[in-house]
Length: 197
Length: 257
Ligand code: HEM
Image (cartoon, rainbow over all chains, first blue to last red; front, side):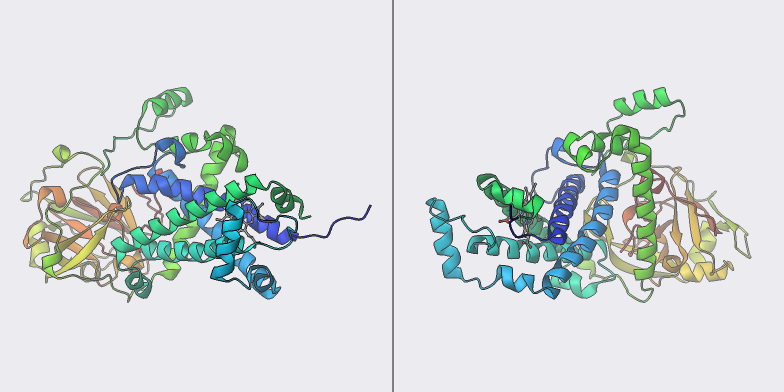
């Protein structure tokens, strides 16, 4: 029996799942930190936050931060060096994203060849990469507002950097939610992301 | 704003457990107990309640590593932004680990600032003597660990001036503070010598009001609120890590930007 070719190399699967875990810890501990002084007129239900109290959430947040950044650099570095980034995510065009999204809604998008990402998928993953970068940079502006004056001013000052950080988190959570729903709809992709083939 | 409770660390494990379950607010161990009891996440992180201590130790070790990274990042010449007086937040928020009704009432006429540790001239200072030193003022943003911030105007003596005046060993690692409200904290020497770090005697041109730290506080625009001790009664210079009230419970020791 000949084995199917590897679609997701081991390093990609590992960085993906490590990242998923780091993001989960960062987001849920971040909600606890947000609750200590909400920017808007709502708080996150305590049950879905992580860390127990503000001090615990901060410890987790500033621990998972290293995992997210280290793992993210490995992911980006290997993706760029191997040329995989270009191969997997490009070309991408607004028109194709639109037509394929409409096809998906009508249930007419083919999932026969899972070695290529479809256009909305490419957009979603590229968005996740860029948005995570924005999350890290705005977080850095909140954490080190004195040491990184340029970053602070780009974010519109300390208080505004908090809002940027929050908005980037919200966008990430929204896109990842869609991402996970899509995986549930095409479960074979999950097998791919675990076994590689 | 938070409504912190006084925390008591008891030794008897059973009592601790019972007490912790009863306590609604910050407690050194509660965060992990609650955190890890999030079933799914606990499984994913490979932690169980029995690993509570090692998880806590690991987190604290990372936090101390983060102290080192932040000390390395800290540029003593980078200044915190200053603002026009028109941007001062009014009223400026009160914050402490207790409610405003428990603010200590310090008698200024009897007040002495005690000095100890690696300091050449350990003679205590009266409030009057502190006021006779050259005074400066600055309008800066106070940033709380909880996330909120507020702009205020503080006046007093550049802390570096004071440290040199008393012959503090400027090569020591830490400067520690003890306060009239039983609060305590400590900072790194580079931050103590930062040009904006100020031994503060006034707020908004007035004698420092009780709720903002009468008779004297340390104002550090490059640090979070819990590293800006109020009602300081003793200052010491040391190479032995002194910790702090919140820091000992898990807040990051460097605690600044
Ligand atoms: C339990 C949650 C998650 C599941 C089940 C999951 C599942 C998957 C699967 C199955 C794929 C491959 C899709 C395919 O081959 O067509 C994938 C790719 C991807 N996922 Fe997730 N994922 C999760 C969480 C996350 C999170 C939290 C993030 C980011 C914040 C994320 C970002 C990505 C990215 C960027 C890719 C593309 C990776 C690449 O090809 O370079 N995922 N995910």
